[in-house]
Image (cartoon, rainbow, N blue to C red; front, top):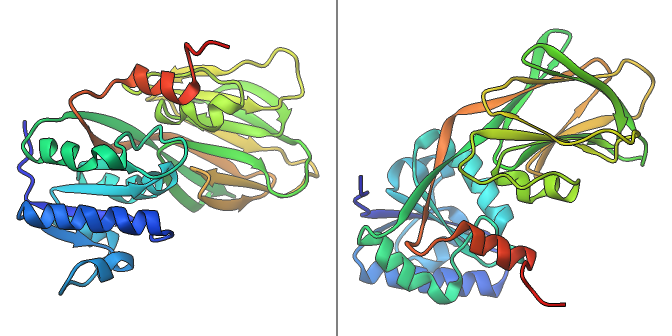
Length: 290
């Protein structure tokens, strides 16, 4: 079903003149299209006679949220939008841009087409993780890319057990563990030797970080699986759980991290010429002659 786009929310990292100029062009264009605008406080100086709102209010009021920035800005936005069923669109001002696939040069044309109802919509899932200590939940958060367990400061290994759906998988010593969505398979999981998962797969991948073994391999499992990581009781350095590389929580020996697919998904809009494999070729430099 085509979305009637009348109110557009804008999320941008107000960090440099390039971002600021892009937001100005975006605001001018949308105003001429008679679209109502909702935005965060950090860009309210670009929009006359308006005040910024919280991200939750922005999601509730918007028919579409446009994120201006790089993958990091997009990750932050997605985690706050997933509970509101608001579609999101990414304008790439970052370096790699696996998630934000529209360039500033094509921004206005693509937006015009999308507002007119010409777009591709896909649904992607997030991960939800809980941290338990002595049987009580002490922290929880979502991740669009990955949940990573790792040593906090010192370059030492961490020992932990992994269970899937209550079944013991292994006991390992390594620098950590990445539990990733298909979206995150192009990020830390890829750097750690994991496979690429197509974005529409209902699966997650578990990838060890520098495991102290010659036989450990990445493991692709059903996305409905329940992954449990139990930190060893032995004497070891303080560890952390990191969500999308942006938020972190300290964990102690004996703590349990429970990771499952989040019930709510995120709706992402793309131009009609969106091509997943083209993005892989471009970002990973496939088919280039040496």
